[in-house]
Image (cartoon, rainbow, N blue to C red; front, side, top):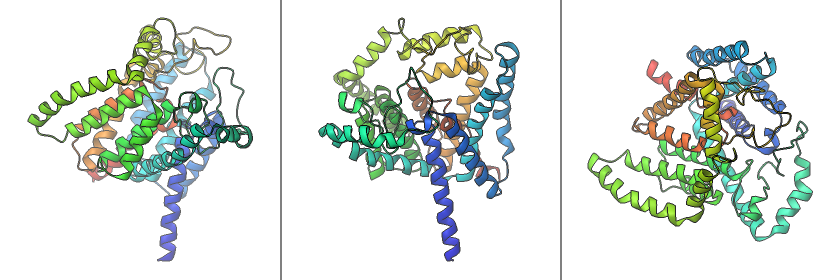
Length: 406
């Protein structure tokens, strides 16, 4: 019995480590700066997968082969063959797949616990840094240098912010009073927080328990426009989907003016959206500016996109990476990168994952569409869908489908 208990704890600890690593290589400054980190985690994950003698789920092949076919067509008609680039795509994809298969139905639960942990840690570093800037400066000057990635490349465009892995000491903490948590910046923290809240509610979490409140407070401290909007959509739809048709109508009539009032009352929300719209035609740093350029690229190669790498920007060459190549709208970026067919497959797979999560938890499957809307809202403001963690969401459906295929 003791040996069995030890094995259970070891398996759970390993699962937590792998999921935490998947989150880290998708957004922590220390791990995000070099592809070597993806490779190290992939090797560890593959070892665990083989060690546990887990069978390969062949139902994932349509997704994997679809990406492979599109990338081969891109190499045939658009760009020179690049083995590093294509291997990078499938290392990220299989990294997400193996970790989902290893952790099984615990994947989302462990994910929620990890994000709650980092939220609680941020509640220590974030307020103390704001109230006592010398505390913040001490970590940036004397602690963070010990956490410089040995694989890090010299970035001329993107700033690699100081970190102690548990918290990112982004300048916005002092300048804008925003909480980045352990992530590259507050907006990305808001993305992972909203996903945690989404998984928590689907799995039976209520609006009034400690995990929900930890996640909501953390979202509040990010001051992320898209994070707030996604959270509004999530909470609104979570309540709405469980009501009778009459109550849905009444609730919508009451809630809509309240939401509009809050939107225009919270200056930074409406101002940020207006600013993004006004900058759409002048810079890709605007979400709408990124979307405009991406859609133009998509129109010139709608079926297979332009692919990752040197030809991604509509075939336009550049001598160094600058704001012209910067993209922060992941929805349109995915469309321009892989074309319409993979774009549809990608989000249909997301929908399937959310649907089977809902069914398995005894929750309305109609919520899957709202969950997809939440993710699209988050993706509209952050470059996320080609990060390793977001490949994993393509495969969550197969964990939950097992119980229906028996």
